[in-house]
Length: 337
Ligand SMILES: Nc1nc2c(ncn2[C@@H]2O[C@H](COP(=O)(O)OP(=O)(O)OP(=O)(O)O)[C@@H](O)[C@H]2O)c(=O)[nH]1
Ligand SMILES: [Mg+2]
Image (cartoon, rainbow, N blue to C red; front, side):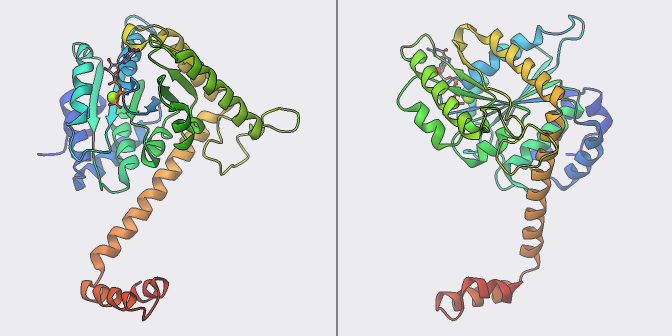
C-alpha cells in the first residue's frame, strides 16, 4: 500500500492517518520519510501517559478523560483527543486489547476522538520509539491531547510513560498494590496518582499509603531546609525524573466506571501543563524525550548495520571459541568488530 501524503495527514484525513500508523507499525521503510516530513510540525500536543498494574481501570479512566476533555475549551473548537493503547505483550493488535476496544466503544461515535492500539515488537528503536513515531503522526495531525495507555509491568512501560509530559499512575485497592508500585519504580514517574475503584473497600487506605510513600520519597530528594532541589532547568540531572522535583504529585480517589472524581483529575492534568510551561520544564522534558529517542535509534541503527554486514561463519567460529574458553566475550567482541 502506498504511503500517505503528509499534507493529507496534516489536514486531518483520518484514513491517511490510519494508514500511516500501520506503515509505522510495520516498520515500512517509506514511513521514515513520512515521519521526517511531518516532524517539523510537531511539538504542540500535550502528551498524557497512563500506566498502572493490569486491570486497575486505566482504559475505563482514559475513556472518561477523553469524554470530559472534549467538553473543555471553546464549544466550536473542542480539543482534539487521540488515544494510543500500547500492548507490549502481544505481537499483534488484538488479544488483550480487544477488551479495550469494547470498553472504549462508546467513544467510537465521537469523530474527534481517535483511538488506536499499538503492538510492535522488535521495531527499530524499540517500543518506545514506535510509540514516539505514533505521537509524531498524531501531533502533526493536530491532536491537542494524546493519551498513551500502557500496562505498568516493566521498564518498557516506564520508558513509554516517560515520553509523556504528564504521567498518571493508576492504582486500585487490593493486595500489595502499593508495594508493587515501588518495585516497578512507577511512583517515581508519577505526576498524578489515581486510586481507582473507590466504590470498593480499601481505596482510602491505599490512597493514604501512597501519600505516605510519596512524602518519604520527597523528603529524600529535598534539600536541608526541606525545599526541593534541582528546580533549575539549566541544571542537568541524571535522575529518572529531573523535571518535576518541585511538583507534589496529588493523589485522587475515583470511581472510573461512574466518572466520579474524573473532573478533578482533569483539573490537575491542566494545572500540571501550566506548571510545566510556566517553569520551562515543558521544553526540558521535550529535550530529554528527544535525546532518549535519538540515542535508542542510534543504538539500534548501529546494531542493525553490524548485523547486516557480519560474517555469520566467522561469528559462529568465534562463539565456538568463546564456549571452549579460548577467549573471553570481551576479546571476542574485539575480534568481531
Ligand atoms: N468496581 C469498579 N470496577 C471498575 C472501576 N473502573 C474499572 N473497573 C472495572 O475493572 C476492570 C478492568 O478495567 P479496565 O479499564 O479494563 O482496566 P485496565 O487497567 O485498562 O486493564 P488492562 O488494560 O487489561 O491492564 C473492568 O471490568 C472495569 O469495569 C471502578 O471504578 N470500580
Ligand atoms: Mg486497558
